[in-house]
Image (cartoon, rainbow, N blue to C red; front, top):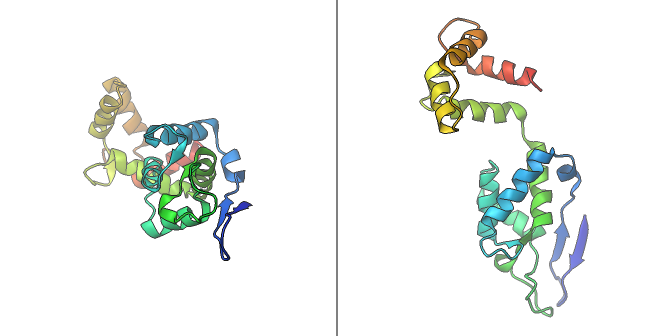
Length: 183
């Protein structure tokens, strides 16, 4: 990790840039999502995110980190604003996150994700009423929400093909097996 010492008094806070190793291993699609989230929440378009904007970016990327954890990231990786007076330490609340810092942090978080837990989260997006399976009605609803009206015959065929026990829908275990076999 590269570190930049702040100027000033004894015990000055060290600002550390996180490793970009995990970010560099992300797919192009994942990298694009991180950059788009940054651009969306960089409200004043100055190339930096405030602490609150940073928390919104993490949420947009699917991370619900506790405040203590995001505040720790602020302490460790937040940078002094470009306009900050050089002879003063910068209190954490005024520190900012640049795009490279956000990319590095998001890359690490994304690479640490449990793929099975991500698939469970995706399953719950289909099974909004918590019945324990994805039905034809769920597929129709999601298909319409994303503007991709799948023909009814295709929806019926999908559910029948992957509903191993014939219960009228794809349960979470079947969904996980199906999606994990695609990787």
